[in-house]
Image (cartoon, rainbow, N blue to C red; front, side):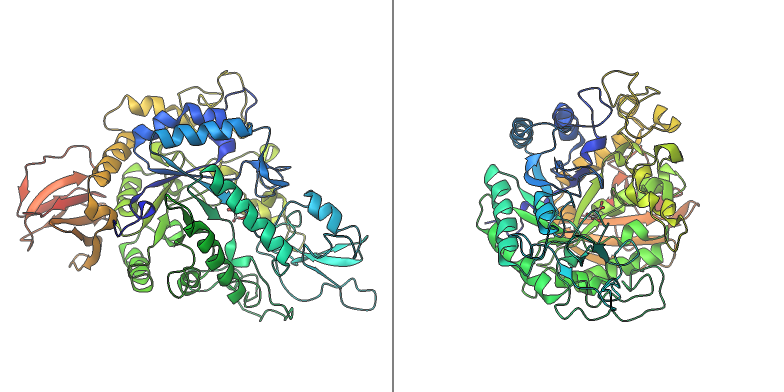
Length: 546
Ligand code: GLC
C-alpha cells in the first residue's frame, strides 16, 4: 500500500456555501449552485473541497450555530441536492469534507430550548451550566473569557444559572462530559460517513472541554494572541483550551474514522502556539490527521519570518506527522489584500503554499485574486461586527464580512454573475475590482492569476516531490531570497522565492538544472542555467533531476 494517504497529496479548496453560487436568484449561494460549478473546480485542478456548514441553522453565525446536525438548511437545498453534490464530486474525483461543529449548538437548538427550562429536564446536563457567585448568584462562576471577549458565562433567569459559551452567547457549549452528548455527536459523525463524505474539518476543536474544577484562568498582560502565545484579553486560557480530555476525544473520533474505507480524514481548527497544536495530532499520531497552522495567514511579506514558521513546523511535525497551511479563510482577511492587492506578491505566496511540505487549502476566490471588501455599515452581517467591548464598538475591526463576499464569476457589476439574474443584489456586496478579478475574464487571458493557478496545480499534480517529497531549507547569501529543496526518488526540485522588488542574480550556483516553473508567465523549459536571474517578486521551481 502507498505509504501516503490521499489527503497528504491533495490540494483542498474551501467553499463558503452562502457565497459560492446562487442558483435560485435569492442572493445567497446554495448546493445546486455549487453543483453547477464542479466542472470549473475540476478544471482548476483541486482534489478535495471543505464546505463551511450548510446544516439547519438560524444563521446567526452563518451556519456555525446548528439546530439540526442531520438536516440541510432549506435555503441551501435538500438532502437530495447534497447527495447529488457528493455523487457528482466523486464522479469527478473530488473528495468532500464537511464542517463539524462539536463544541456548541445554536441556542435555538431543541436540546438547548429543553435544557434551559429548569434544572431537572432530560437535557438539563447537555450543556455546561453552573451556579453563579455572590449572594444573589448573579456573578459569573469564574473569570473565564470567551474567545471573542467578555465573560464566557451568560445568565439564564428561568433556570437561575449561567451557561457557558466559548464563542458567541447564541452558541452554548455542549457538555462533553455527558456520555449521551458524546454518543449523540459520534452518531452524527457516522451518519455523514455512512453517506460517503470523505472527512471533516473540526471547528474550534481545542475548546471542547473546560476544567472540571472550574479554576480561574491565570492573568496575562496580553491583549491580542500571537503565534507564540495564546494568551489574550489579559488571560491565559490554561483551563479552557487544549485540555487532555479534548485530545482523548480527537483520538476517539480518529478511531471511528479509521473504520471506514476508502480512507477518511480529519483536519482540526485550533488557535494557539504550535506546541499545543501538535498535541491534537496525538502523542502517537493517533489524533487528528491534520491541524491548521495559521501562521502564514498572519505573517508579513518577510522571508526571515516565513523561514522561522517553516522551521518550526518541520521540527514539530516530522514525518509521519503532516503540516497543513492556508493563506486565508472565512475568518481571516484575504491574503492578496494583506499584500496591498499586489498580484506578483500573491503569486509568490501561492507558490510557497503549494510547494512547502504539508497539505494546502485554497480559499474560494483566491484563484482570481478576490480582494477584501469594505462593507458599508448598513450591510454588515457578521455578528462579531456588532460586539462591544467595554461599551466600545470595537467588534467592527474584527468584522469578517469582507472576506466572505460572493464569488466573482463574470464582469457583471451588480453581482459578478453570482446570481443568475444580474439585477439581484447578493447578501453581501461585490466590489468594483470584480471587473478584472473574475473567472470569465481571467479564463480568457493566458497571463491571468487564474491561469497561473491552473498551471501550478497541474505542475503539482505531476510532481510527487512537491506533494510528498522530503523537505530541506537551503541557505542563501541574500536575505530577501527563500530557497528550499523537495526530493522524491529521482525527482529533485529547488524552489527559489525572491521577496525583493529588485531583479536578483544568483551567480555560480552550485546546482545545475532548468527552470521548470515560474510565477511569471513565460518559461523556457529547455533553459539550462548556470546563473539564475529572478525578476522582482519572482518565484521559480528548478528541476535538477539530471
Ligand atoms: C470557527 C469558525 C468561525 C465560527 C466559530 C464559531 O472559528 O471558523 O467562523 O464563527 O468557529 O463556531
